[in-house]
Length: 257
Image 1 (cartoon, rainbow, N blue to C red):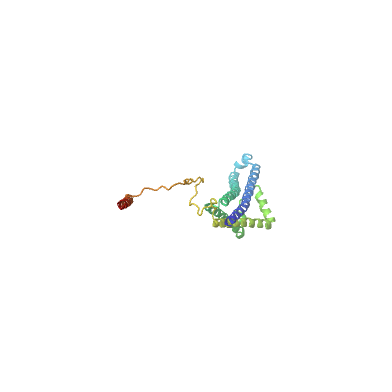
Image 2 (tube, rainbow, N blue to C red; image 1 turned 120 degrees about the vertical axis):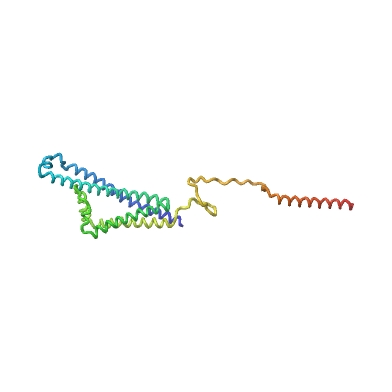
C-alpha cells in the first residue's frame, strides 16, 4: 500500500514539476527574443563617428559626453534586465531537473535540496509581488527599453490583467503543490532496495549490488572441532575405567565355569 502511494506521489511530482520547467523554457525563449530585438534596434542608432562635428565642437562637447554616458548606462541596465530574465528561466529549468531527480530517487538529500530551491523561488516571487502592490512607482524599478518591446509587454499585461493574474496565481499554486508533494514523499521514505523472502533485510546494500554469495552447504557427517586438553583427559579416564570393568567382569565369568 505504501509503495502504491509513493509511486502516485512520484508521478504527481513529476507532472507538476514539468509545469515549472515549461514556464522556465518560455522565459528563456522570451529573453532570447528580447536580446535579438534589442540588438537589431541598437544597430539603427547613429554612432558618434557618424556626426563628429556636433560632439566635439565648442559647447556641445560637454552635452554630448553627458548624453553618451546616459545612453551607455541605459543600455547596461537594459541588457542586465534581459539577462536577469534569462537567468531566472535557466534557474527554473535547473529546479525542474532537480525535482525530477528527487521524484525518481525519493532520496532525502535531493528532496531537501529541491524544497529549498522552491522556497527561495517563492520568496523571490513574494518580494516582486509586494513591490508591485505596495509601491506606486514600481515601474521605475525597471530600466527603460529603447526597443519598446518591454513597454509593449507591460501594455499587454494591463489589457489582459485578469488572465495574467490567474496565470500568475496558477504558477505560484503549482510551486506550492510541488513543495507539499516533495514533503509528503520525504515522509514516506525511499523504496526498499529489492523484494526478498527473508525475514529481515541486510543493514547495508552494495553500491553495484554485487554482494558476495554465501558459501554452499555440504550434506555429511558433522565435523567436530578440537577440544581442550582437560576435556580429552576426562574422556580417556572414563574409557579406561570402562575397559577395566569389562575385563574384570569377563574374568569373573571364566572362573565360574
